[in-house]
Image (cartoon, rainbow, N blue to C red):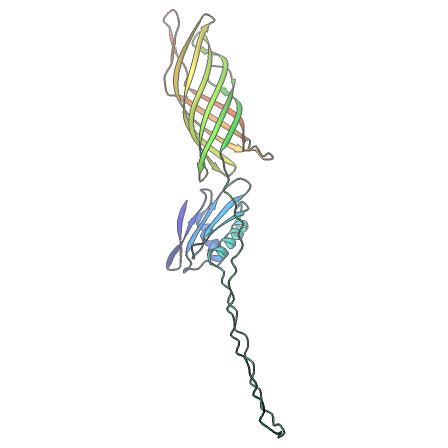
Length: 298
């Protein structure tokens, strides 16, 4: 989320915040921190895990990057706003000129032979102090790329709960959203449709996106399932089924592997009918729901 701060009659400072942050609260915090109507530049705050990153471009065009603590309340927001305000304007130190030497009062001297030597005073001009830039520690934005693996249990109304395994590859991410390639395998299970009992085996591959909202992570994607139906040991039928899915996960504390516990929802985009030897047909329920635990290797 990006906006311009309207401070007084001027609109000069651009502010970019994570989706979870309140823009009005930040405007108030920056005004209290001393951001004025004649200030110019850009302030960007990027949310991460245990640390956030603050990017500042001051009015002179200098860019600063600083690692800060996550914003959790008004006090932490005010502290971060104060840091941003201090970096928004280049630091210029101006010292007063040195005091002038008072004029000496002439004192009467006794007459002496010959002329008195003239006193020579060298004029020394003050040297203008140079400004010292504020030191800034450069940090890199959090890289969410890497591999993840997980396991869970899925349930379809026509079959008993069955376990599944997943593998995920997190590709390049921008502003908290990452592209994810997924593979999954659901081992053998028994499916009951009408009076038929059929064995089912799934292999799944697809792609989607994940968005980081602090400790919450939401995702959606599309995939194709290679599904094997086996009415008995002597016969089997393979079919391709397109599917859409969504998930909502919460990060579990206490580990560097970023474990997430998530709910998974999915629906087939293709209707499947099972027909027995007598010509009786039954439709396979396209919906499924599951729970999954996964961890990411950084």
